[in-house]
Length: 180
Image (cartoon, rainbow, N blue to C red):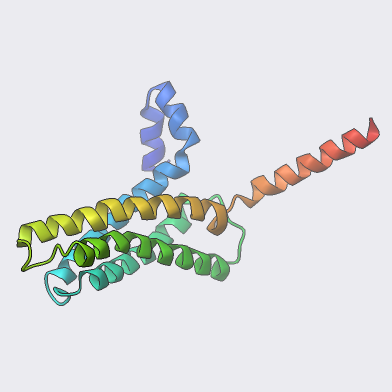
């Protein structure tokens, strides 16, 4: 039994039912939290060292590394009961969707940095870094997360067994209507 299963099983009944209905979302959020830490750490290491004048590029690089970790974790854990696609097709879709997500996550940082000019020397080091954090890691990640969760369930890791079952049930219903 996984850690998440143990935690869900200890919840009071109404919360457990809610958690059971949204099990994939919970796992997706845990993967997201993990890759958030990876993304955040790499971003600030790059931003405070070799990419100090290029925060958007640092964000794209850190986001790309986090996406690679996200693929492995989502494929092997979050959406392990889904799929049916060939791995190379699934991976291509995942990285296209994630690339769009990295762009969405970087857009608020770009606006903060270059439209509102929240960069040194126009603002203090502290103001710049607070603005970068909120624009890239709060607003940007919320945009990215909403888009990616929908796109992952819809296109990358579809529940093909559910779709086949629905088609089968439709066929049976049509047959029953034809015999009436």
